[in-house]
Amino acid sequence: MRKYIYFFCAFVFLSSLTFFGCKDKSEVEVKNDSEEWVSIFNGKDLEGWNIKIAGEDVGINYNNTFRVDSGMLRVVYDDYTSWDNKFGHIFYKTPYSYYKLKFDHKFNGSQLPGAQEWADRNSGIMVHSQSPESMSLEQQFPISLEMQLLVARDTKLRPTGNICTPGTLVHMGDTLRRDHCINSSSVTFQEGEWIHGEIEVYGDSLVRHIINGVTVLEFTNPLVGGGFVDPNASWAEGFITDSLTWIEKQDTKLGSGYIALQAESQALDFKNIEFLNLEGCMDPKAKNYKSYFVKHNESLCQY
Image (tube, rainbow, N blue to C red; front, side, top):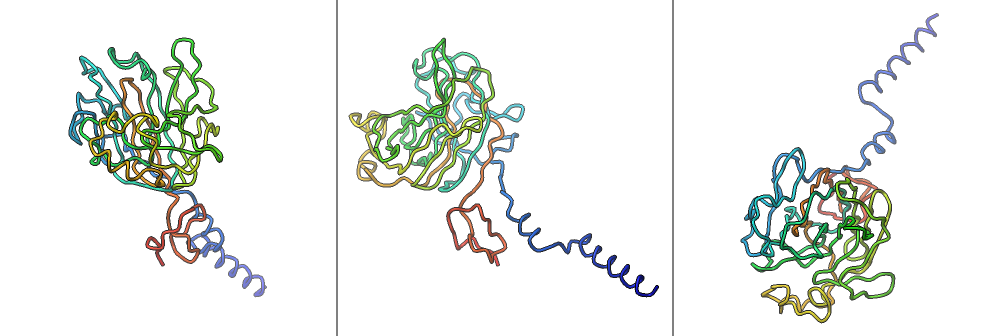
């Protein structure tokens, strides 16, 4: 009888270790290795974001273009009386190099009258962008890699998740592409439809565009250069006053920068903007090791 009592007590003791947090080491490691996505838009205000609109100083939200409503970051033009080429971008505060970004977006209503026809039902997410502070006063687009967002216009079929290259160049396979915009393989979506987008960014090596879970485009080896919107267009045509700085950077690798949401005359909403950093401590002995990191940063390791 004593033997059974002994085994029963031992079982209760071991069970209590698990109950009070003494779990198997492998189980703890799996839990600690889960992806740590963070929301970079809090749904309440524009904290952490900075605005640059053409013709305005950094931080000026001209005519309340960018606003927060019902948990959405909205691009709205109901306070405008005319367009006046007020191309705008709202930048997240921190530059990054290796990461994943996901977001939902929806196009709303008609384009602001007087704006360029090509901007109708057209917007984008800029990655590896220059900072808003480094842009010229009248500059309409930052030097960046744009994931172009489109929906159907009239009866025209238009893929989304394309790549446009203001002041940049990309490779598709082994080919250096000099066209300003390159279409993806996505289907055409309709105005008013929520669309889920993702971008995977791996420094200066690879960028991948994903729409509703389907990879629709990827490119490699992004560079500074190619003129502003095409090889024959001068940087001055983009209202860039420090064009010599960018000319000197011609063909240099573009591997980091800011994330920015675009406003170019078409109302739209963004929500569920989430970020996963892929740069961190890759030492398995560190407390903050993650197996999904792809870029090691020793300075971030915690022991």
